[in-house]
Length: 292
Ligand SMILES: Nc1ncnc2c1ncn2[C@@H]1O[C@H](COP(=O)(O)OP(=O)(O)OP(=O)(O)O)[C@@H](O)[C@H]1O
Image (cartoon, rainbow, N blue to C red; front, side, top):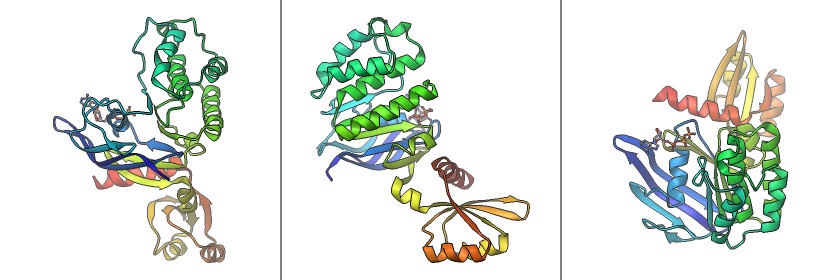
């Protein structure tokens, strides 16, 4: 698989604030990535830099193997920003006409399908649309562009659950027909866990975890049982957090648990279940906050 976008030792400071600290990222072709992090983690700053809109304080970015220089607009990239209202007086149809020539794979038939699916009136001005519908216009551009690298910053913010579901479904359907690199930033982790194939978790400007969802599913466990049995069973495991509920302890574990260990757990009256991405994320971030 080819690397289409990467950063090395990327830094962004605003005065004394280190918004991004030495971040290495690697995005390959034809994968859907999730960029996850709490408020203020640096997701937008990172995406702004990857798309050439913001110049790093230090470090390098390469797009399709070419170093991104100050003022460059990366080729083959579409960036759907969270705050996307550049031309509030233009009609939706006009915005689409302005955007389309920038993308060589732009598909007008797909654009019309998306306008209908998301129930966006192309004759309305951007300023007349609800917050959610404004997000949808950005999402339509991101999808219809079929850019080889597409970045969506919080694409489902302000959308109701039905529209969010529609967006994920159409994205997955179109991605299956037209594979490309898609990077989504979001807070809605359990929703995104079904969509993305690999994640980066960002916290206070640093990467806490970069892993494929396949590995996460095999390693993220909730293990519960009596404290003594649990202590023994988890002695060599990577424990993220332990909570007490009466005489039962519940541990968040990020580690492989073998079939033999699973069989042993039954004898010890220990139960093992999968851990949600939301829980993994919370325990990782809380773990770091405790040590800060
Ligand atoms: N132009 C700026 N000047 C000063 N500080 C900034 C600027 N832009 C962002 N920051 C700070 O950098 C940090 C990262 O912000 P950023 O918007 O990238 O985070 P985020 O993960 O996208 O957050 P959210 O999910 O809340 O949008 C925050 O502490 C923010 O206050």
